[in-house]
Length: 426
RNA sequence: GCGAGUGUAGCUCAGCUGGUAGAGCAUCGGGUUGUGAUCCCGGUGGUCGAGGGUUCAAGUCCCUUCGCUCGCCCCA
Image (cartoon, rainbow, N blue to C red; front, side, top):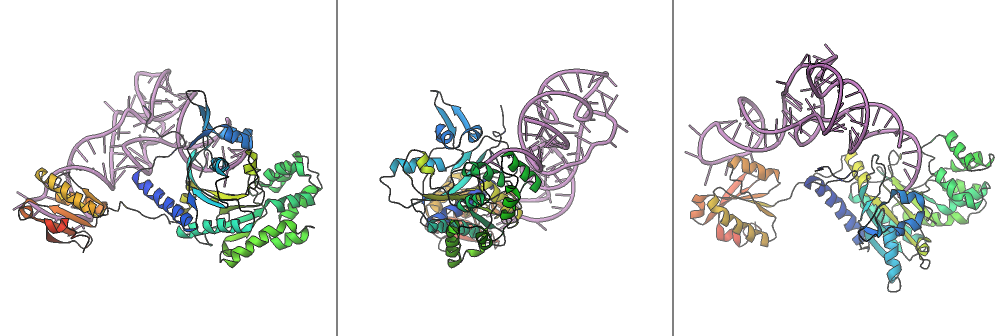
């Protein structure tokens, strides 16, 4: 019997589950606050939903199998295809734009590194059916709002943003023909990770003209949107980001946003702005990433519907919060512990607990019948605020002892008063 | 997939050149009747990741395998 969890998957003991619920509650709260509605789909999907989208490489990472009737299924590696499927199925009934979010559990069958497991939860928020930068601004503001709720601000995290249209223009400028763009972008995505020499070598292998390479790398050193714009003949590809920066400045979120030509995002379906969130010095794996993908839905056979969104995994952000000491210390949050000291009082304890629970309190009983010092200590460890002590002597007079754990004070209360709301009226 | 490291009690780890397993914390009990700290005493708990080999003898050496960690590769 194998007791270990499946490789790459996680067990959430109550202690970790509290942290997870805390994170999810922030995601839900900020999403709903901004008018996003929650949706979900089954973690199982038809394998070809993913195969069609990106080809071999992603197929190898699918956590896939055949069911008993031979259907080829896969655990979802990401939510966007399921979202696209749901949108396309009902798109005649939907009033666009649609603002939806989800917190799906996703699976990838791949090698594990820091911040990457085979199973994770990924907050997704998307705006479907709205072209233009206002949707991007809303999506980014949602992200920023979530980070602030977690206690991270512009000193801790930065959203690095680029635009696929700018990247394409840069490639055009140095004479790289359009069919090569996809491969070249993948290589440029590694710019932070490998040496300039290695990068140049990879580009040469793609058949990029030797003269174009230094020119390209030099253009990509351009740290500034304006500077890059003046270097390129055509200002048109810059309009989108300029508008977006303007919107975020106006809404007071400009500090979080930084132009970065090296942001590419591996997937081919991005068509406009692309972004990743990371620490300002990019010292670790991106916390989340996203962008505009106007042509994705049409690849599933539907009509073209513009869309923008992001995926935000739980693993990396919890690592970041832990490293910064900003993971909350959460305890069980029990309000009341009812403590009988003889088995005769078990029934009374259950009855007291029941009546207190009806008034909305979080109540547990301790039936261990251990020594009182032990039981009080356990109650304290559980974060209990009030202990209701059932002693035979007091019970005979219809009373219980209510102990305020923080103040270490206590008083006798009539059982009848307790059951009619004495605790909540204090 | 390649390379390095690692795996000993629930947790964190010690165990030298091979000689039949230890500490701290946690847990449980006690320190005289029904009260949370600290302290003191004691108990439970390990086929030393698994399998094979060398040896009189393996936690310790060798091989295989699995898990984990960190690089590389690949990529959200």
